Image (cartoon, rainbow, N blue to C red; front, side, top):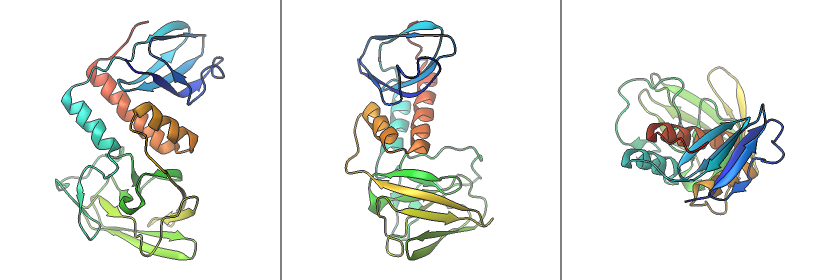
Length: 234
């Protein structure tokens, strides 16, 4: 049994179940019409829609493959070994990934869409990732008085943050400009420590406003829940 955490909440009971609220195992939620509460725990995520009464048993029902996928998502060192040039050694991408592909790791910056606050687990291992690898791409990264070009060759998905040219500083805003000339702002938040429990990690992301990473965590845990057939009692 494990506690759950509210990660999203809308409706008349939202104030009673705000994002970040911890719910002990076997908590019963009574929701009203139009309520929708998303809870996360070690078992995955559940979206509870009112009206109705729901019990959170927190039982983990997951096979080894799903457990490995989640462990890879949360690993602060990433799911593959990096070379000194910043590329990642691993299975080569032989075909373009779908445009809606999710990042394989919570601590990778999505080079195509990331904006807003981003929580950093280990600055020295901060990585850019792209899901579409069918062509060469160059992006411009700029910080306070510093700048660097991040170049991907066709088939390459990962690049290390250029620490020498653009140091990682918590609370600093950076801009990432793509070939289309559109600039996106990224605000880095370096975490002093990374919680090992999923619910505590979700709380840290909520507290620091790292919404994109929270969304990735919720989506991945939801996929694990669906694959395991976890439904719970109503």
